[in-house]
Image 1 (cartoon, rainbow, N blue to C red):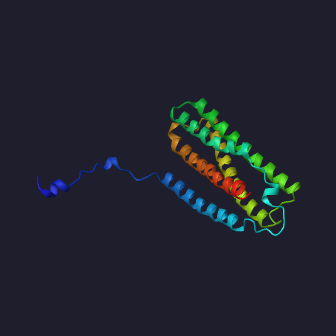
Image 2: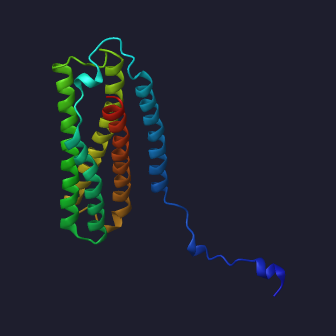
Image 3: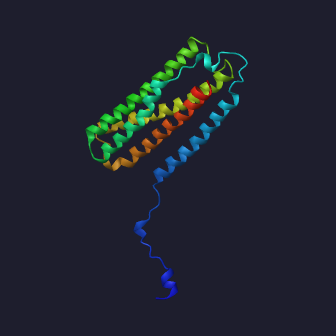
Amino acid sequence: MTNEDALTIPVNPAEWRLPSRRKMAVACLIVTESAMFTIFVVAYLFYLGKSLIGPYPAQVLETPIISTICLLGSSLTIVLAERALRQEHRGGFHFWWMVTIFLAAVFLGATASEWQRLITVHHLTISTNLFGTTFYSLVGLHASHVVVGLTLLGLVLVLSMRGHVKKVHQEHVEMISWYWHFVDAVWIVVFTVVYVIGR
């Protein structure tokens, strides 16, 4: 055997494939959205404590423990739904998918309730002061992503109830799961910045 033969590594074309376009697209979306959230988080931290008039965070913010548990718990339930779909357990998929939707709806309802309290009781709006502007911008940006995720979850549930979601659609469901995990991860950052550091 020559030296040239020894350096030649046999390659089986079937062993390597291009990454899924769908996965690449969602990964790029998550990176882009992460950059946007970073800008809003930095802005919130930059203007923290610079409001010349009240109300101030410590006076009006209540830590959203229950809604946070619900949102983070939905990351577990969507994983369980994915697993059920892989195992072709239709009932399990529907159950865990609906639990995910319920938990997301509870979180969104709690956010709406918080905003209603801040606006009507404490008269904090987006134009009240710097705190109001940055708070509603950051938390509102996250809430808009929850709405998008909830819409996707609802659409999948409707299609699944009609028999259109099967094991072959596993990657589609996985991509929605990726997006949902991203929304949950962003909330950890938002929660820390707004309700822990910002208080």
